[in-house]
Image (cartoon, rainbow, N blue to C red; front, side, top):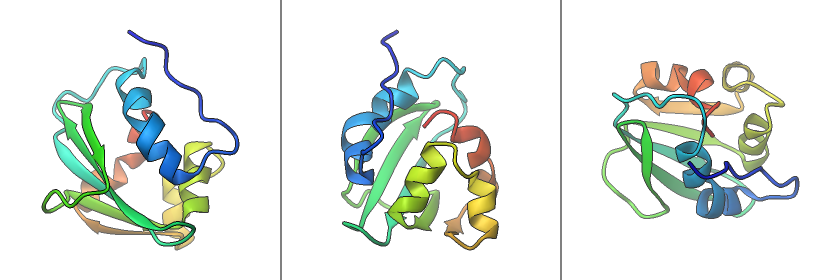
Length: 121
């Protein structure tokens, strides 16, 4: 197993999606959620906004892309600062949701499990 890359302090959400996410998740020492097959979509609404799709198969990230891949399992709509704050463990996904910093569409049950899944990110 390769070493899991650290999150640089000055990284942008675009750099995180394109350079780090796949390796960080796939090299995470936490056992994978083997039954997790989903397309997780992050819609960043500010600061170089964009839509990012993460294809997860058997708990492993197979692809990270800003291309349309079909219907996402769940979509998280949030600002880049909130996204990076969640990654840095400055705020939990639940707190961000209840403070209305994150909107969720699609499979709400999977979205609520993001507190567990964020440990992989």
